Length: 522
Ligand code: ADP
Image (cartoon, rainbow, N blue to C red):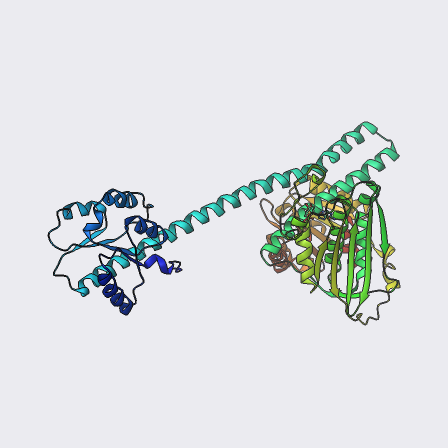
């Protein structure tokens, strides 16, 4: 057990009857290595017991002059774990002796008294006292862990409420947009506007869910970055595009100071874009309408500095220190009511550190804007024979495929069927693994998208069965997973899937899948 008994808690407290007695006793205790303390009287003894006491060694005479009740009160008011040992050294036939047992953990020694007897009484009292202190520590630890559990429980409740609130924010405009579309009928322009609102809200919901999944990946140490030499500004451009609608909607001005030359960093392109998008998004969120946001990139001494600055609501000095902690949000005043889940900056910091970089924040104070600065090491460009000019040459080369979609959720099935149909593929659908297998045997599709958890036969079983059948050796199997944990991905690959896609499926990812299958690039 962890030792947390302080030295003074094992002191022998005494009230010496004479100077001579005190000197002799002190010498013996010193020789025995026993910590001791002489008190002048019972009131001082009571005070010292509060500071810590292994055993009190007293003579019955100290109980005279009304001190008995005082000592009794001290013992009666001990905490539940404590039973203070008292050794009474009674010289002669003391009339109060029978009463002493009322004091609790009492040992009475009578003359002729040898020091060895006194020492053994003190040592055994000390052993019992040590056990009492251990019990105290156990109780304190127990109380602390209960407190922590209650706090964690409260934070969990708050978090669930915040998540629900955050998801409801984009849901409300989505619902209204759908109702408006019903009312608008064939108004093409009106519907196009509503669709773009809906697309933004859906993107926001996806971002919330992705952030939450990333939080769990960070907590499990399973966040992964796939790094290669990339042009930082490429990933910045995609971040800018994703937040531009939000910035425009708030009538804010985005000032870009990028470099003309590419800046190579050894990084995961999507993860860096996530970092930049998060910072830009925050800048827009915490800057009033009509404000300014600056994105600056500068390269020097083997590193690149990326700065996102705004002239928004700023950050108070006392919040700066903890701003990168998970679930830290400002909630002090109403203009900060836009605060979300409080996970974005924690994710940003983890991602930057996974790229061997650092992030810092500065703000002169409330309403004086904020500056987030990311520093990353630069690297040499990768030598490649692949010229960027060929990147989009395959856009039109994607051909039509015979596709089967297996999913037990009707809405998912229908949406994927319509998306794939709209992309020009020939699509059949099945609502569970068994039906999927039957249809696959009949149609021999070139590509099968399959959900994982389904009644009758799940996706893993379906993949395993198809992989044993020679006629599907050229069929590409793609798992549709709701979870984007590495172990789920690994399990789908182990079951025979060629690839996996995380739901909700993005049409850009679908296009890329088919571009790859057609042997072209998008
Ligand atoms: P969220 O924005 O979801 O609350 P973040 O982790 O992204 O969570 O940010 C944590 C907190 O830091 C926010 O609640 C906000 O109060 C503050 N913050 C972040 N960026 C800015 C900024 N550019 N200006 C002012 N405050 C900011």
